[in-house]
Length: 146
Image 1 (tube, rainbow, N blue to C red):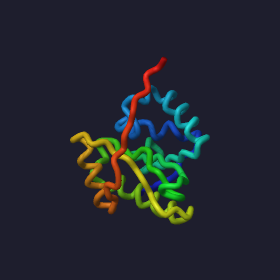
Image 2: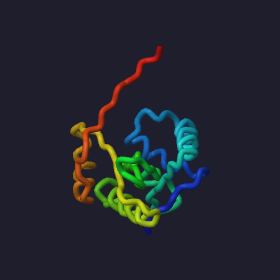
Image 3: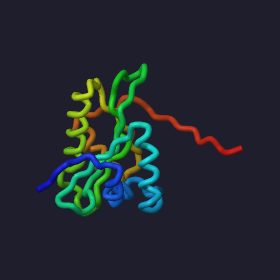
């Protein structure tokens, strides 16, 4: 039986195998757990798809936000599935869970950013299939240290 559940701080390590597929620079399991713990302080939440008590097959990290541009919203930071479990609808199920949570929290929108590399094409198909639309460009500037 497949279930989606929110991971408590003591369960963060269960998300690592799926998350490292997307965030290849997150370091070791311990470094990942520490980084997520720091993000929890800012409202970051982590979901996993499980078929048993093993590691998550897919994960979604998100947070509640509010700003002038979007009002009250949920922002999806991370959405990733282990390669062996891709194509089974887990990403869509996680997004549907997030959409229900957005409604429960009184959010008018859910946002996410996705890279434009060719290997992200299947993720983009998922987002379009979930009725997301491209609403803006995202710009970044790397700030070199002094």
